[in-house]
Image (cartoon, rainbow, N blue to C red):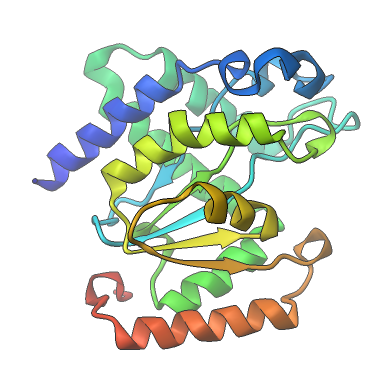
Length: 236
């Protein structure tokens, strides 16, 4: 499959998935799970990021779900003012603009991610993989915000995995999946049935430092990478 055909397939699958509503993921508990502010943003699904140089067999990073659901979060941040319109444009674009809007959303995600505390975990994972962000994919186990950033319910985690995450993984066909945090790792352990090698990198409070357990897992990722033919991920 050519790069263009692969990217087009990703764009089409992602467009199909963003039509899945919060109610379909959260079920009857959706009103209680919905953030109290910025409800229109909370209704937007981010289907995931796929770097422009990602290839099947590559690395997928999985977080639990997007932040931004706390009651104090009453207005878009400067970063969200740039990124959320890109998600909206992708969701509502015409078929002829689909691929361009998809790639614009991917580019916007990278700029957004670089402002997150989570980058302090993502960047060491990339170093352990000896690759850059262009070569990986990033998914949320549950692709919607939750009220007060609470852990999505077990029902929502199952529904999101079955209806959103798993279909994307079938297209991506990763060789390794790295869960960012124990919550995402628990979802991966319970839901994933594929053949990719899996790791969970623990997160610290506010992602301010790497825990000893996280450093141990990063060392195991390096060991795995050195024993595996992953030349396609190399920097450069």
